[in-house]
Length: 237
Figure 1 (cartoon, rainbow, N blue to C red):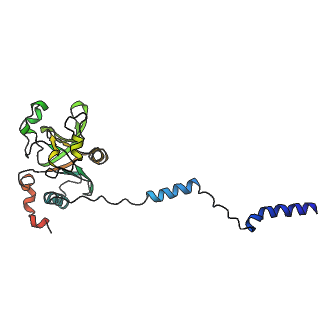
Figure 2 (cartoon, helix red, strand yellow):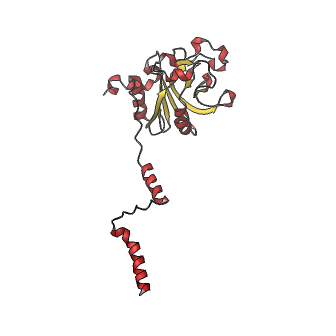
Figure 3 (spheres, rainbow, N blue to C red):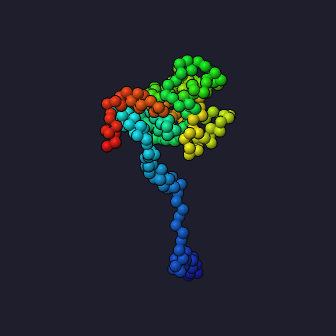
């Protein structure tokens, strides 16, 4: 009898919290459950990148490239010199990045013949231009064994980040809302590190791609002859 009473007492102790209405905390989620929850969050598709408003010239060039497939299934970049802006597209023509750039000090759309063979100290102020046109760009070595995206090797025009130890406050100029102070290089195109390392290097690393540099002064059609077949009114629709 004592054994039966002891057993009943023990049972009462086990069930008494429930009888009193005491709530039990839900069991903590297991590590696998947490992992699944995180995976579901990561699976949420990211919002597509949206370009800022483009100039009419940039609209015309990007529209022509997209419709004609002029990039030949390679990634491409559009440099709008007047807006001091870079636009980056993947091989399928989807925009993936945009931002400010630093370009040549002098206005002009042609490279001075022989400028690529000169040292920086030999290049005159009027020769520090970023040439306009369509270029097949590939990565290669530059001075100091650095790697750059060569836009036009013959004239020493490349796309790269801001050089270390520059004396022109280039980082400050790049972040400035003004456009005039973005003209500071010898002709090369300086781009933000995030765009260069995060987009340009991975996409252009194997096969390269195309770079379309919009002109400062000469007509857009002079830099890109196929645009003669695309009237301005057609792009404004």
